[in-house]
Length: 287
Image (cartoon, rainbow, N blue to C red; front, side, top):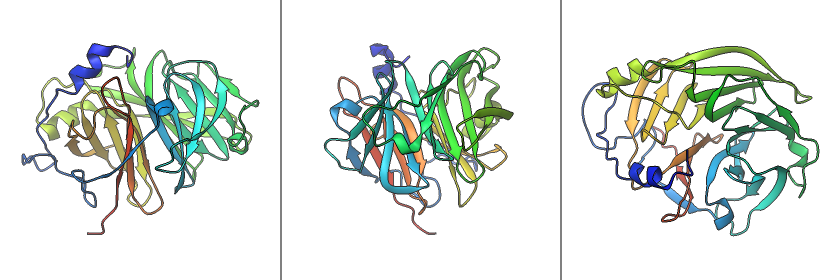
């Protein structure tokens, strides 16, 4: 869990070797179109120190929406703002990710409980029309969620579920978000940890994803694992295509990811007692 001080700081010491699908070893390579060694960095303010999820409304980077993993608050801000606006939606809890779909805001708690409310209330200090969705996910720990606003689908990945062997595969669950906010299950998918091992050359890897997002131009999925310090890229059908290590100096605790309409990539890092939280912007560069 993120509240374990020792675990946080041990993760900063991990120095992985870079690898991609071709099997060639180079240090800290980047996905095509991005330079992971030179991001634009935006520090977040103290009340977003433990930023755990980010989302954009219809792909617009003008305004960011975020949560942190202790208070039941939705934060709204522009990159670089010194005082983000916050809306209270729930009690204190371990909130892990946020998505916006069909004019609904969905928040994922680590135990798999979802909270949804109208996006129109994101400008209020107190959000009153909150719906709680229990027992729609199996027992386990969850951190990654993404909403496809075109299809109205919501995707959630297990970080560690009782039904999974995290050394073989990770389960994912697909939901439909109706315009009235109703959330209903429509299917599932899986991510092969064995294929991640094959591409990376790692052995006995236990994979624990913390965030995911879809590049709507390429239809590729980007999956971040803070514990493993990895970015995994899959095709539209979840087949592993590339695996990239994340440089600990930049990606201290990556727990949020989003693309904007121009394919710019944003990854947020949760802060701790030694380091402030931040959002890294990787500008898309046409090849």
